[in-house]
Amino acid sequence: MPIIQADIRRRRTVQQRDQLVRDLTRIVHEITGAPLDTISAVVRELPGPATYEAGEPSPEYQPGEDGVDLAAMAELAARQKAAGPRQYGEV
Image (cartoon, rainbow, N blue to C red; front, side, top):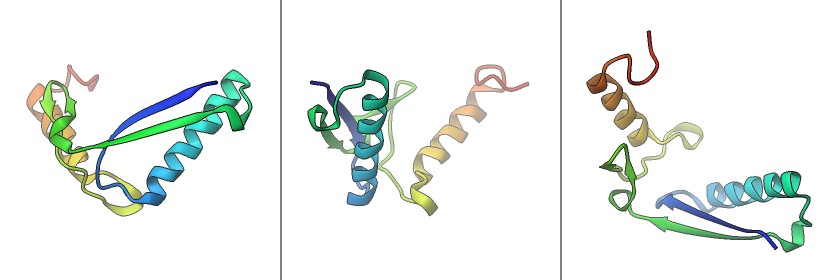
């Protein structure tokens, strides 16, 4: 009986969270063969600063078009710029 656990930053819509769980459940079912009705899921929604990326507190989720996380995209761009091209596999 698989149990999926997902920690995500808060402020996602109910629809986004539900879609995430549906997609993860389908993937676990496809990979393990476990019947759908035996797969459980737990989603914990955390404040952005309670999660970390590259050793730094994450910003709060900031929804953009199609659910794109604008705050995370800005943070990633800033880290890439500060780190230089080689650290992120750029030429």
